[in-house]
Amino acid sequence: MKKYTYLLSALLLASCTGRVGNNGKQVITVTIEPQRYFTEAIAGDKFNVKCMVPKGSSPETYDPTPQQLVELDKSTAYLRIGFIGFEQSWAKRLHENAKRLKVFDTSKGINLIFEAGQVHGDHQHLGSADPHIWNSASSALIIAENTYKALAELDPNNEAYYAARRDSLLQEIKHTDRLIREELSGSDVSRAFMIYHPALSYYARDYSLHQIPIEESGKEPSPSYLKGLIDECRAENVRVIFIQPEFDKRNAEIIANETHTHIVPINPLNYNWHEEMIQIAKALANH
Image (cartoon, rainbow, N blue to C red; front, side, top):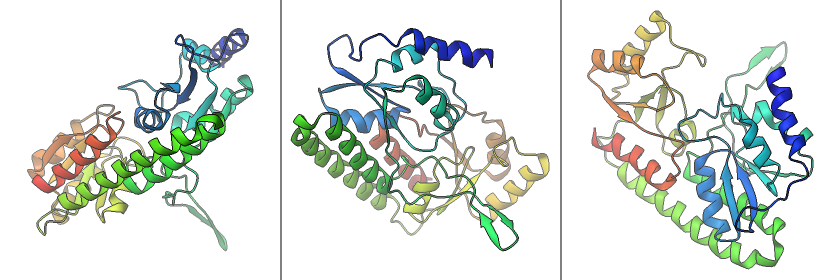
């Protein structure tokens, strides 16, 4: 509690500062690097775009620094990616202490994937939404459109500029989708893959793949669960185990050693969204 009080006090101390960057442009803040990629592609030279979660950090557990909160209060708007852990934990506190900040949810309109819910009597409660919407070309098209609408609302005088840049980004996303489908079109491509943290649920849905997470309910797998994963890896003819820089790779190495599968490092939080999406498809096609 003391930590949160201190961090939020930093926002209050900054409340009298301006809302432009050092170069005189208005500042927009986003949550993760791929989102910065989409936003900068549309914003061009009209806004400075800053990212809350730094490279190498997990947005599931990240806490902002006091300096970041000071800088956030200088932003004209905050563009949420939707349901990532950082946003879920901090959204209310950020809003309460930066009331002038306009907030836009770029996940609006996306067909969300929900975790298994719980049944109570004659009704069921849905689980939480899978937050990794950006790892999907079909979702990226919607994120781009929502981002364009936010920028056009913030700066209506340059709406045509943003529309043209949005159209270019949409074409790039569609091109990425075509390249992925080409890579995955071979009859010998394995349709199942393992990954430590299940960040590719939407990617798997787009391309009819089977994602098998190593995590057990968001935690390290137990020995018995790990044995089950090894059996499933063999049964599903898994050839690739993806590992991410924010997570421990020891369990992936155990499974790989037992099943002779390939460990492939990926970074779903990479700023270079296009390159990362293609790399994932190539890994599945070439192993």
